[in-house]
Image (cartoon, rainbow, N blue to C red; front, top):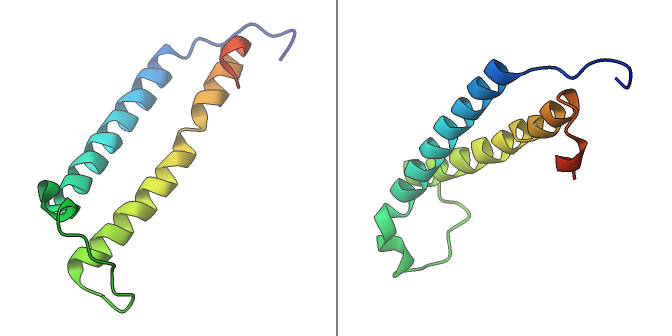
Length: 90
């Protein structure tokens, strides 16, 4: 990569950032729905580990999808390297 010119990934990064914005808006709305728009913050109870209600499963699936989406965030570093922006790589 040292002797190669930097890539211009303008359209790729635009698509990537748009997809991440859509995912994060979905996760924000899902979080609001799961805590019933803040009502559950005032009435906290420890969850039952045998609870298989629709709401509990939705919360688990949303958390898992959020965890998997963090792997998509790692492509930022790949884009920085391909664009030769090494000062932004941590």
